[in-house]
Length: 107
Length: 120
Image (cartoon, rainbow over all chains, first blue to last red; front, side, top):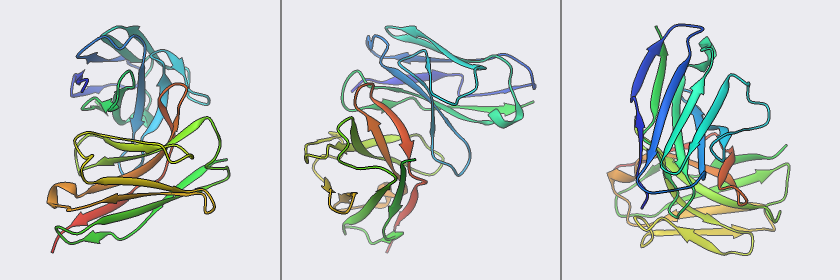
């Protein structure tokens, strides 16, 4: 299985701050990486697919980049409604695997 | 607008079989661009992909669960189902069904999730 790691595991930032989360794959997954947002008690929501493509309807303050084994997810200006846990997910190989998540809070 | 809804017992006894159904509304499960998947999440933990099925009945399972999992599809009812046998407390989790866009491996639509507790 491809192992996914994320850092940090949690972070606190102020409204308006730029927030960056990293995701690393245990082997080259080219750009076969997606990012999800999960709010408490809710299902995950797809934000970014193919490492850098914004899902329809997702605010442009969310972005993704990277290829190979190292990926970055960015919120350009943190909003109160962005409080959630964020997961990366690879689909280069079965089984699909997710990162452990990064919990984002407001400072 | 496609929606997914999980249903099934919220409590299962150890060693028994967990059975859940996902009903797809607002679109056809036979649409050629999608697989249909099950994903679970133990309380306070991360997401684990269980498996996927195509409308033809073709399946792929997570090797960690493969010996205990069966996913099936009923196109006439626009539903797909999960059976997980010989459950233990470790199978206690929120179970989600999700649509998997096969072209990009992305889970683009999710059900709300259903909590299943394994306990005697």
